[in-house]
Length: 411
Ligand SMILES: *[C@@H]1O[C@H](CO)[C@@H](O)[C@H](O)[C@H]1NC(C)=O
Ligand SMILES: *[C@@H]1O[C@H](CO)[C@@H](O)[C@H](O)[C@H]1NC(C)=O
Ligand SMILES: *[C@@H]1O[C@H](CO)[C@@H](O)[C@H](O)[C@H]1NC(C)=O
Image (cartoon, rainbow, N blue to C red; front, side, top):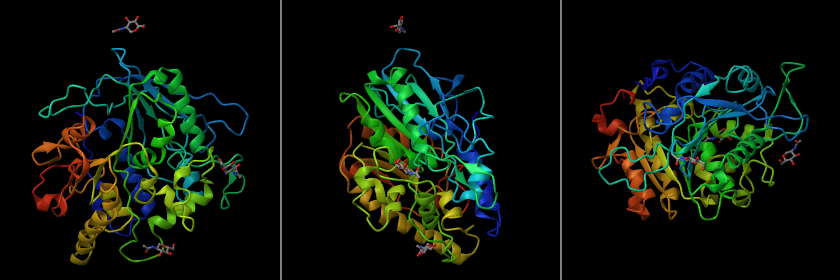
């Protein structure tokens, strides 16, 4: 039984630093199998081997923050399927040189201690999934689980090592977009060049990566392939914090933009289609609520409007008193407001829960009597379209207290 990771971080006092808070949450959102909603046993690749991408001395090589090789786990289909999923690992971001240096000594910044095998989780939909099928996912896909070790959702690139001012002699390697491109190229050689049905997915920071890079991988796939994206808990609001200080998430993302040299060049990590949208605020192209109009690939958003990571790290509350609770309710209103832009775009879909979760139990969360994966399949198979493809819980936190799942934090 896959653990559903209780949100222990919620009990933490407000004074707990964001980095510590983030580490707590990260340790719960990295496991790949939780992101596809299946929880237990993906039917492919329980023992997919680790492949490390070869490096040379050049400045183009894929690399983790510590300079070690980037890598992935690949589980080929047992049935010669031409369906493919690339599942991108999550794990937050490092917002400055110091936090990147400490990350470079962990599995989120170095491949030195990565496990030799891992599972993966398909997000392709069965062609013949019926509306009643409570598990419409086709688990026989070719599944590539892409490890995350660059700290910036696969978007940075610096040719040369970057110094850490507080630690003379220490350097960081920023090669996120090279990591993404190298893994996609490896997948193409492994048979993805013949894909007929492709899904890019990932949770948390991997959900942001999914928004950011869906079009990039789509451009390398056969024009005949059906290409979609399924960002999971990757819709991080542009939002200030409860205390209204300048230590807010948007400011942190802006610093990453400059530190990691995020650019719109063809070999840079941001979508060129976003470049003209925010000339004064180019870092908005690193934030899903701002950059989504640039995305051409159809996508389906799995998210909570009361995402527990966002409430802790963006709103920076533990909602223990009435004022904080009111701020959480307002956060849900603000989510609806920002998300309107996604709903207005033709071709997309989404399932927005009010469960207070970040590692959400997507196979158990229901609206209109059916789980999120069933609604996802309706969208993918064309059974719904337009605004009907969005199922947005209109209630307050945890469905006004009626959603009784361990993975929803108490309110
Ligand atoms: C998969 O393809 C290989 C090579 O084309 C073939 O040898 C094998 O029999 C196929 N397996 C299945 C289950 O169709
Ligand atoms: C910043 O990124 C661009 C695009 O990838 C690249 O051409 C440029 O060399 C990078 N700058 C540095 C200092 O590495
Ligand atoms: C976030 O912080 C920056 C400065 O770091 C400030 O300019 C901005 O107004 C803040 N944003 C919000 C929404 O509070």
